[in-house]
Amino acid sequence: MVEKELIEKVYQAVETAKASGKIKKGVNEVTKAIEKGNAKLVAYANDVSPKEIVMHLPLLCKEKNIPCVEVGGKEELGAAAGLTVPTVSVAVMQEGESKDLIKQIADETNPGD
Image (cartoon, rainbow, N blue to C red; front, side):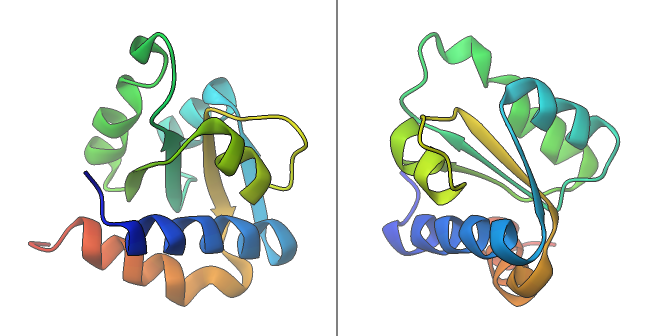
């Protein structure tokens, strides 16, 4: 289980990046962003069914050295991304004002690097 504090930081980073940077939403868009190495942070919901939809995201992120965090539900992630509908995953493309926050998240998710 990921710490609540880390999840809050991820939501905050997504909200800030949405306002001042650029984000991508949805598994397909997020997967493309990771494969191209353009994502700065990836968040995916833990209440996805079936799980196979998002199982590849952490593996791809690890390959590309992109911080990837499993967060609460699709509803909260959608809300953080400024959507009125739930979303399974979000990638921060341009950090905007959330750059420092994303660095903190990266440090917490990859403590050995």
